[in-house]
Image (tube, rainbow, N blue to C red; front, top):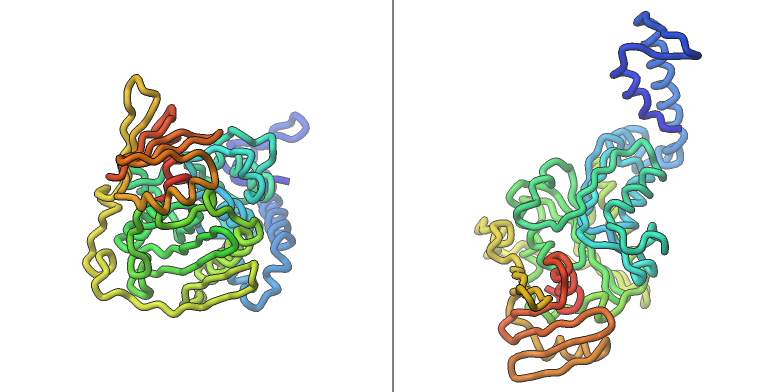
Length: 370
């Protein structure tokens, strides 16, 4: 039963029952009180086991019910994270994703089915989550997060990184440091996952820990593969840290690195970089748009040019050779398989066979990486 109808009745000037109009105010408020009582009872039952935990309790549950969290990326990490947060009763959840569902996503993206293929991830996820918990407000942003679209992040208490590329993470870091927003970094490739909670002015920021990598220097799920148990596990760990923050408790201070195949968990102590360009020098290169990957549509060629940083062509070639046909020239390399076709130049330009700029950016992030 959807008890959000109580708020709907409140906006009505009358309430109808069996064709009769109850015009008196006492009848209106009687019905409203009844619905609110039913809603409180349903909420109490839904979260009863969670409220029994000494780590959460009734007070913690109330904090969760009023919290606002936004998830960047609704893929393997994001679907698990959103599912757990909705079931935990986090009051408002935002979903940001520019991509559509593909068949290979179903191996690890836990709330999608075969019928969802070729549909926007954020919108399909929202429909599924609303059926799971109709009392939660789901806000959908089927767009690319960049320096021009990030203002909506200000409306949330906590930002969760469930994306698959470093450029977006550096952008989130710039935004959160500048606006003093707490966020949680989360990633998974192969059988390994990493997790770190970032609280501006209290912990090291993302750029304290990671330098801006050259394209091709980092593995991606599309070149190295990924085990679905690590995406589920590391996302669950992220949600645990999120619940700590939302209930005013202390999260893990270390960078957590977990290899699920070897069942090895590392807790790595990290320190702030006194020369950090972001949190110390207050320079927000990604937020200003100075470091954003540039895309240009080439008329008449059916290709879109992405201008990235100077790539590690040798490393990229070795990984791509396992996934398709690679032809290398003095200017760069040409890669083709049954999914894509692009030419990567040595200076960082990439000509991608694509219809839209968004599709080209997805291909670039997937096969070249950033």
